[in-house]
Image (cartoon, rainbow over all chains, first blue to last red; front, side, top):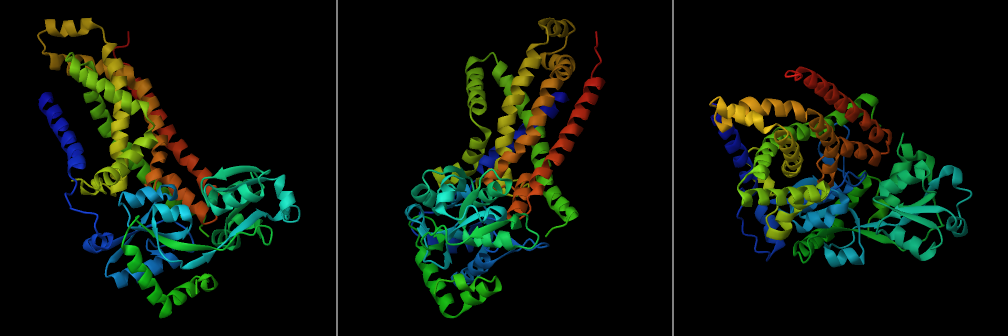
Length: 272
Length: 225
């Protein structure tokens, strides 16, 4: 009796494990056309993170909204496919893309050369810049580059903020943070004196009503980096990028982009 | 902003994922662990060798790395993403399935060594006694040995199982939205306290497990010499 039960349990377990492994679809994705692959599925899988005001969920909703989410929906509609939003870990974005778990990243992704080499980036659709954030109490003392030289600084690893620190604030104590939000946390906790992060995120979190970050402030005019732009990232060599570029251009022309931006108070950041 | 009870509800949603992963890993891990322990104790040398190499690889590499490999390698190496979205029994989504698969494999290797230690700690005399009484090998194992093994391995098991509850927080690298990930999302919305508050959930869960194991040890104190 017990033998039978054991055998049954074993068989069940093996079957589950085997199916999990062997159950993979034998779909032929010849890698010729990424656009055909996406259209074939009838679904554009958009990789995002929870990032107000770009991609986020309203309090009592599971529906993704935000500037990027709405723009992605508008573009997908023109492509003739549906949209599925998948939350990803930002650190794994390139891997998510090349392993085809997602088809594109649409989440306030800043265009830079390194990313352009690894992924296929769309035309710019929004303006961004790096800003210096300190505790409001330190706004008077940390408002020069000289003062920052003897301060503890942080920025997201690999970001334009980090680059600025490496070039202009070499003598400062610098600790890279995993993500922009972690850099903000460092400043709030006092483990770093100042951070350099995206204006979009800093402005939003500092000014949001009831935010824990409201004790921080953006210091204008101390850090001047070149303008940056947000792009949509597709798989390297993807032909979907060109298609999305022309759709984006059309949506800009007919005013859709502006209408969406106005909903999130981002109309000034739209690339004309 | 979210109220205290709203935060609690959202965190509980995340904690459900944590507990799901924990419970399923425990169930499948214990079963698979027992099988693996038989493999490593096998007198058929090639089998025990292969099993031991397997255990070495799984215990010798970080769990986080294994999660990344299981979830991303199918798409990266074989061009077949979402391997787990076609599993016959779909619990939550394919990310959860990949995490569960990794956890079961990983923890069964640790469990198997605990089983092996427990089984080998039973004196040979017990096996011999079973034989003398006319029991088959299987009967001896399930009716004589296993009962004593269970009782001996409770302390090391409770260690491993309590570690398992906390290890589940690793799965957020592939965006399985467990309780810590939920809390991190609150941080991204400007609320920091939920992240530290999650500790309470783990603490309660581990407390319950500790009490439970204390009870089990008490219950199993039969055969007490």
